[in-house]
Image 1 (spheres, one colour):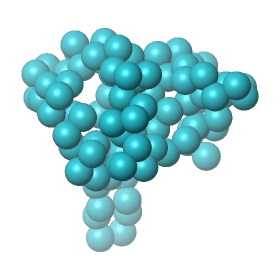
Image 2: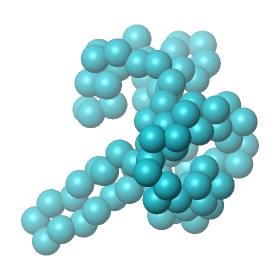
Image 3: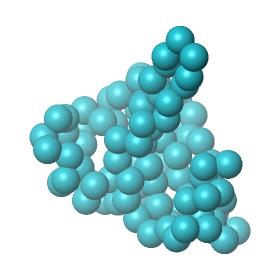
Image 4: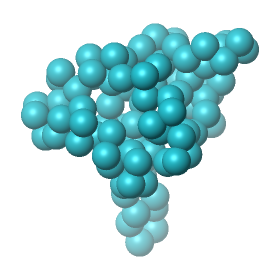
Length: 96
């Protein structure tokens, strides 16, 4: 089963090589809103959040990026990119 981890902004550069290809495939379907390099900058600046799904051996199987949107009564996690492999159980664990 995958466990999801939030990557702190100061660790994005360190882990980027492990998630770059996964996110590049997702960005191919983004409609050109921003590039993969621009996404990386937003992650390192804390404008978006990087989460990774890893197995017990900490091998990363999937990555997703989130833009948090704050409303007066709600906080919404808008997934901006998702790549790699997961299943319904793994995604449920992410939701929790």
